Image 1: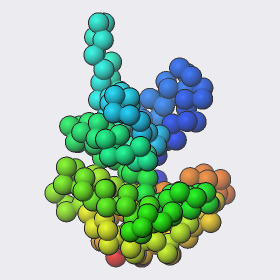
Image 2 (image 1 turned 60 degrees about the horizontal axis):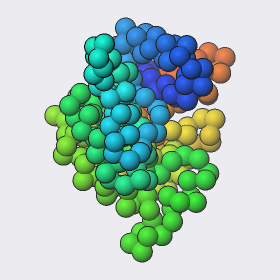
Image 3 (image 1 turned 180 degrees about the vertical axis):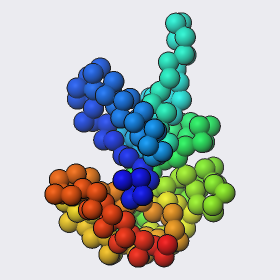
Image 4 (image 1 turned 45 degrees about the horizontal axis):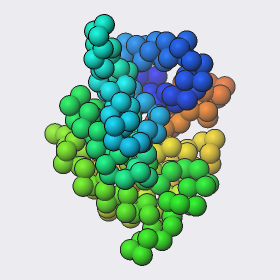
Amino acid sequence: MGASCVAVKPQLARFEVLGAPGWAALEAVVAVARDAGLLVIADGKRGDVPISAAAYADALFGATATPWGEIAGLGADAATVNPLMGEDSLEPLIGAAAQAGAGVFVLVRTSNPGAADFLDADTGSGPLHERIARSVDRFAERLAGSSGFSGAGAVVGATEPRFLARLRELMPRAIFLLPGVGAQGGSAGELSAAFAGPGSALVTVSRSVATAADPAAAAEDLREQVRAIAGD
């Protein structure tokens, strides 16, 4: 699995629904991922007014001071974040990620069918998802890495590959997180426009690997497909 997978993306709602035991299970998953040398992307799609966004940022990337000592957060390497409340709702998350050496993946054009309801709406200067993409690129320098790519990344659904070339043009430094391959109907072979070289995009797959008769073989097959389109 280590050869086919570089990160795990726990869906936080699936743990939070179980209350305190669920958060304990999430911490255990993060610990196992760390032991395996994998990055952890917390998929919580957080976004709120700045004072609440700062609390989310501490929970994901930092720690919280209390009268009884400091309480560590999840320690994620990256998290998915929702930009629809505006750039000020992203600022605390971007700032905390920068301080922790982490990253964010901003929801730009998601993989669900209902994404078209709002994210494709015309703003007078193109669809809303393009306006969000420009915001992501403005944050790029804040989370710039030595590779030329930025920790200010973008969630771009693999189910609508027709948008990839334009979004890559608007976000040349962003790492793309590409959900939707497999169970949602997206195909890895249609994602070449998302890549600006090796390491510029992550294809995320859950159900079609986890439910395969041979999950390791399914993961290896996906890895080879991605390598072929990424130029690695």
